[in-house]
Amino acid sequence: MSGLLAPEPPELPEPALGESALVHDADFRALDATFGKVRDVVNLGIDALDDLGFGLRRLPEGSLEELLVLPLSGDHHRIRQNADAVRHVETALVQYAASTARLAVAADPRWGGDAAAAYLLRLGMHAGVARGCAEVVTVAIPVLGEVAEVAERTAVEVEELVVELVEKGRRLMARLLARVAGPLGWGVLAADVALHGIDAVTDLVDDARRLLAIIDRLTDMKGELATWVEEQRERLELLREVGDVARARLA
Image 1: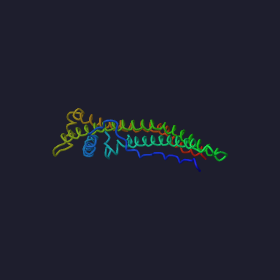
Image 2: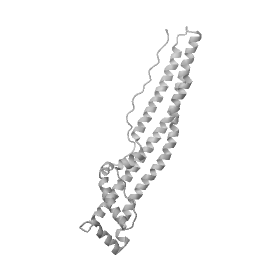
Image 3: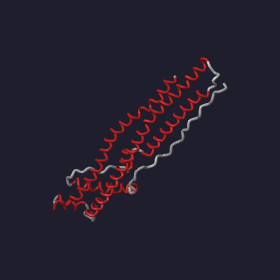
Image 4: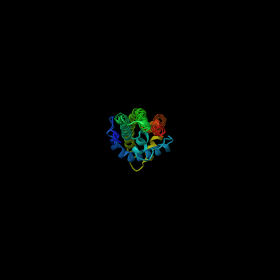
């Protein structure tokens, strides 16, 4: 019919992967590559100290990234990308609402009757629902931004702890190798403890306990983050409801 226009297509560009917003530890990747060797030597030392009655736990198997960083922090790059995607959806909904409203204004004034009334009412509903959905979606943008920020802060803290873990592990490895070098090996260490008491291995035990304390802190972070993530998931549940609300209003 003359006087009817087509709505303008909304723009939904593909968002780029989010950039890092914080300074990350440059030594982390290099240290991750050497962690396996350090861990194996330290675990041998821990086994020897346990034979002397110290009851220390062994360091866990696996790479640092697999064990600590990704399970704790999440991928903040992807989270920021999702925030940009939601922002694009909000913009598209606003554009759609404005475009739909203009269709009603542009209708031929000579067109009247029930068909015209139904058409204009339908346009108004579409525009109103789109605006409402845009307002709801907008709420999710800062939530995703906050999630990305916390994820990256967590990643930085994990990286710093991991760097300390490997550095202290290297030092402990060097001390262990220095103590057990030679054909008698661990027997020398045991004899030293028998002769001089606990003071003979205090430095080794302290370093081992610090390594385990770092691992305990990283483990505690899992529980802390699990609670926080659940709270953010509840805040983002509104996104799941947007489609249902729109379909119900336009049915």
